[in-house]
Length: 187
Ligand SMILES: [Fe+2]
Ligand SMILES: [Fe+2]
Image 1 (tube, rainbow, N blue to C red):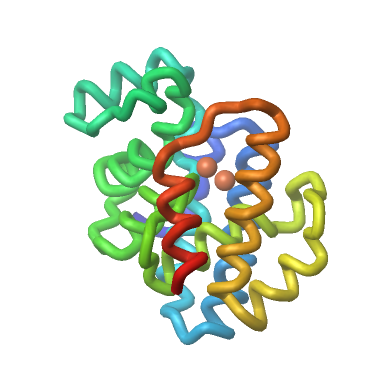
Image 2: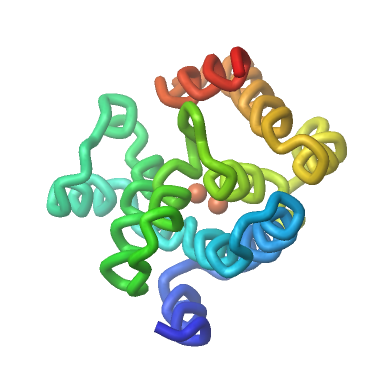
């Protein structure tokens, strides 16, 4: 599928806000790939497609996940919008002709991260958080700099802030976010 076709389909499936966010993740991921010696085209594709399943409602997300044999955790059952990462990897392959397993893996773990991410996975996780169209989050200036100077530390910083934010809110947290944080703290 050509890049133009991918954009056309995405525009159809996503809200305007989400589409603009996706473009932000694409160009931010491309810039990070240049710094961290990752294939720039892979980073762009993973970036533009990372939220391709975000247009689905919670109910539809659960239904589609069941239909396509995507495992659903207890936490995802209660917060089905989180499934958009794993569903996104599924749709990137099924609907956007992406066969590259590294791109699909980076899409699949972009919300919670996972222990021992490779550089492309870290780039998508970070780009999703720092892209310029997002509303500014605490310490974003430092976090953006770290993305280009110390990628591991940047991932840790994002996880730390995300967990602090969820705790302050009394919100539930996906086990994987905590596991990822524990891993990055000790590596
Ligand atoms: Fe997402
Ligand atoms: Fe996103």
